[in-house]
Amino acid sequence: MEKVIKNYLKAILDSWNMDELDALLAQLGMIAAALQTKVSSQSMQLLEILNSPYINQDKKYALLCDLAQDAAPLDKRGKNLLNLLVEHSRIALIPVLHERLRLKMSERNKSYRALLYTPEALDRKMLDRIAQSLSKHFNIELNLEERISNKDGILLTIEGLDIEVSFSNERFFKNLRTHILKAI
View 1 (cartoon, rainbow, N blue to C red):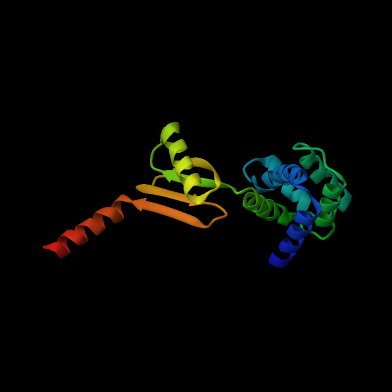
View 2 (cartoon, helix red, strand yellow; view 1 turned 120 degrees about the vertical axis):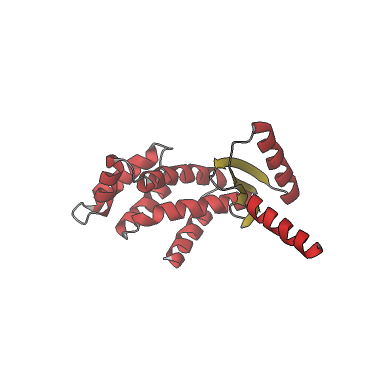
C-alpha cells in the first residue's frame, strides 16, 4: 500500500499547482475527518456505507463528492481522483493520502506544524516566543500548537522534520542526583 500511496501522491503533485493543491488538501481533509471520526453514530453509518459491498460505487462516489464539496468545489481532476479511489476500493487511503499531502506541502512551503505538550497551559506570548525562536533557528515558518499532557515535563515535536525535544523533571533530578553522588 505504501507504493500505491506514493504513486497517488506523485500524480497529485505533478498535476495540481499550489493553489489547486490547497483546495484539494481541504477537500481531502473534509473526507478524512469524516472517515476518522468514530464517535458519532453518523460517522459510523458513513463508514458502513463506504465499506459496504452492497452499495454501488456511484453512490459511494457521490457521497465522497458531497463531503469534499463542503470544503471547496471539486474540479475535474478531483472528481477523477475520488472516482479512482472508489473504483479500486481504496477509500481507506484518503486519510493517509491527506496527511502525506499535507506534509509534502509543508515541505515545499517550508511551513511546519509543531506540537508542544506541557503539563499546564502557557501564555500566548511565551508560545509566540518559542515559535519565533524555533522558526529563526531552523529557517522555517512554524505553527505552534499547545496540547495539555498529564506527564511531568515538556515535549516538542515538529512534524515533517522528525525533530523531537523533551525535558523531563524526573530525568533531570535523576541525572542531578547521579552527578552529585559521583562528585562525592
